[in-house]
Image (tube, rainbow, N blue to C red; front, top):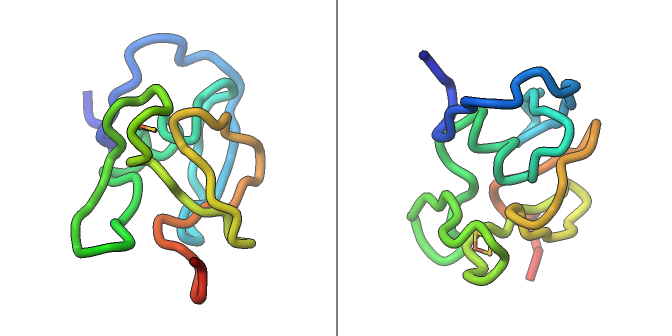
Length: 100
Ligand code: FES
C-alpha cells in the first residue's frame, strides 16, 4: 500500500471524510481521528520543534510527553494526540509569529 503519511490506516477506512488545512494545504482525515492521526496519515511530520531544527511526530500518543503540540492559525496551541480533528480546522506545524 502506498501512503502519503507516516501512519498507514489499516482499518475503519469507511468513516466519513473530514477536511482540514495544514500549513495552508487542504488535507483529508476521517471522522473520529485525533489531530495527530489526521496529520500523520497525510504527511510525515507532525510539527517542527520550536527550539531547534528537529522534526517531531509525537511520542507517547496518550497526552503525557508534550511532544505533539501544534497550533491553530489563530494561535491557539493544542495537543494533537488528545484533540479530535474537526471539519475546516486550520492547523500549523510551527507557532504563529510572536507566539510565546
Ligand atoms: S504524543 Fe505525547 S502528549 Fe501527545
